[in-house]
Image 1 (cartoon, rainbow, N blue to C red):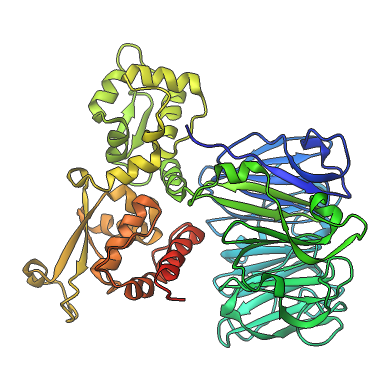
Image 2 (cartoon, rainbow, N blue to C red):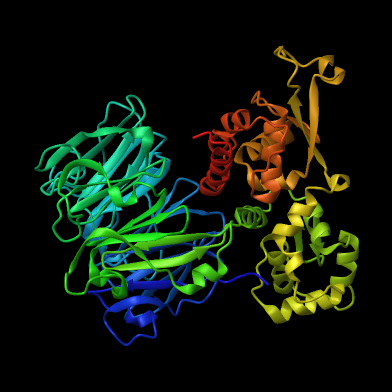
Length: 607
């Protein structure tokens, strides 16, 4: 059966004992939470109060707070969550459609004044209409202390909230609504933290990292102290080198895309022992490759590519058996032992996730099955289905190749067995299809009844998981119903128009299942939309001018979530041609694909 993830937390100051077995206000060690074990946690977001939001894939949320322990929310069915950020007791939710939604308490809504405070409560999620009214597509959002930042229409930067120390970079006291931050160059990335009165962003031309906000502790890395009320260039770095930036109260930590960890700021409270005015490489982590960063009010956590966790800051915000209790400040990164759950269940595709609020930190496992996430979205959108199952009153569209391969039955056989004299209802059908598309078993009893009707073995064996089924489907050429036309590597002449050359061998055909392309690539979805308007064809042409070898590796990745090469293939060419695949083919999970590509770089020493 599918593995389930537990959520662990540790921290101090505010009372989070309402979701643990601990009857204390402080959690001096990693403590397993009461959050239901699941494999569907995408992100946990926590502010500065004893409440937090759990993002359940792809559009489900659970809210936990001390007085009302748990509330469930679900966005409209046509909305898929892209990211969630928080500031104190305000949560902003960004969806793939470029819309922003809010979940907040009316008593704290002044933190990011986007809506009528009198109507804003934790009772429901409310749409933020400002961006739609201004015809702005929001690409990404971050939140600092009492502040919000929004990257819109690809490169336009907006900010709102408190600006007493200049953290918004808008030149006025406060932003009562999102206001443009005037930057001459195109903004590509934005960074802020729930507890920090600072903001960082990257521009593309010139390739720079900027900062603004409270710099009295020298945590902005601009070389001098004081408030920075306009965006100021951070020294020593190109913007394209930055993976992530995170600020605690007195210090900022920066991780480069090569995994190097830098810091600057004061050694007071959460800072490292050596005070710096510009970002300086942390010696204790020099030989480590950092991949994740989490910062709270007085703690910093760094996770490496080897799943080693390091931390520094106030000792009571960490498991105390790792720290000197006599000294309340821990000024050097120290390795923090993970709960045994993570070492017992972690495999090459799973990833530990770390997140911090002001005074609490979370650990949980993200099962790296981006394939099931993509297929889950495809199931919910019902895009390009090619057949239906169900009763006449409740026909449910499905993708034939996937359903038949997972059950080893034809659609007609499934229809006869499930919807004959003893027809199952729509709820039971949907329960069955959730297992088909993304391995979810939400009702064991009903799924077992369905399996019995189909004469399938229940529960599904370990060898019959979605991941292994789709990997096997890759080898099943007979059921492939679509072809990608790729220009032959030996033919360097450009095709000026459609003619008979296509039939003379200038293009090679790569067979594939259409639903796989639809699930994995936004580019192919858009191409299918265009092709279907013109002609119902079973072929589509790839215009990237990438080699056939690279395209075949990418297609196999769509089925397996891994990048595999043969001894005859040129790794340097493959890495070079696939380096822009996430953006060009609009893949949903950048982290997993780039992780697979980095394995090839490391294997062949291409860094």
